[in-house]
Amino acid sequence: IRYDTDDLAVPLDGPCPCGRTLPSFGEIRGRYRHYVSLPEGLLEYAQFIRQVLERTPHELMCGLRQFQIHLSRENIFELRLVTVEPLTEILTSHIGDAFSAHARNEKVSLRIIRVAEIPLPPSGKFQDFVSDYFPAW
Image (cartoon, rainbow, N blue to C red):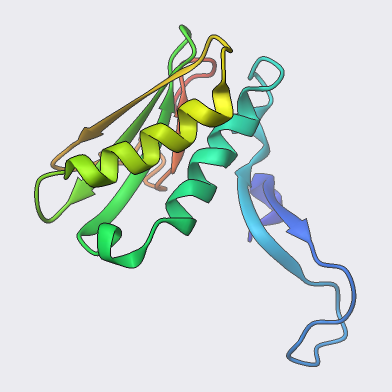
């Protein structure tokens, strides 16, 4: 965490399990500037996609090397996956069905694609969430 670059994390309640007495944090959410320009409600979907990935059974995810969520101005989420093997229908259905159930009839959608690599932005810092609502850094 680097506070000078506006990193965001969720604070933990209570003492740290390791015994440390200073305030602790849990989930790292990213950088403030990446979310500030999003229309209301869209951040929830990016977080939901992350949660689905975290909860996906290991046997479906064992070939995953990297992911990135991209949000277009048309409110289409694109989940970019770098994998060892081609994407399976089981994996894409698992993620897609969960997203569709969560989105219900809202005007958002998810496209899942396999990519060879996810290029780094000019800053050289990997971003697991990017959006057309703000410029690349």
